Image (tube, rainbow, N blue to C red):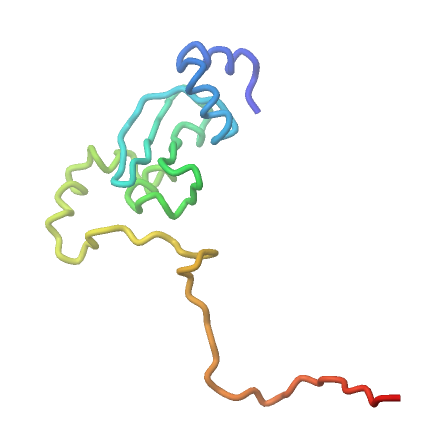
Length: 136
C-alpha cells in the first residue's frame, strides 16, 4: 500500500492512463525508467528512488501473466542477482554465439494442458472395494 503523496506524485509522473493500468495489473502505482524489453514484449522498469527491493518491476505483455514468461537473464536482473540488465551487459550479448544456449525460451507449463502428468503402466496391487447391495 502506498501513501497518498507517493500515489499523487506517481499520477503526475506517469499520467492517468498508465496509473489505471498499473493499478489494475500490478496493484500499485510506480514511476520509473524503461530499462528494456524482452522477446515476449515484457517491459522492465527501474526506479532508484523507491524502497529497497521494490526498485525493479515488469509490465507483462500478456495480461494472463506468469513468472515463467520472464526470460532467465531478465529474471536474474529482476531478483537482484546481477546489476546490469541483459540488454546492456556485453557478456550476455555475446552469449548468442554460444551453441549450447537455447534459441528460444521454454516457459513453465505447470497447471496448463502441456504440463507433464505421471502415469503408471503396472496393475495396482490393491483393488478398491465396490459395495454391492443385495436386492430386497
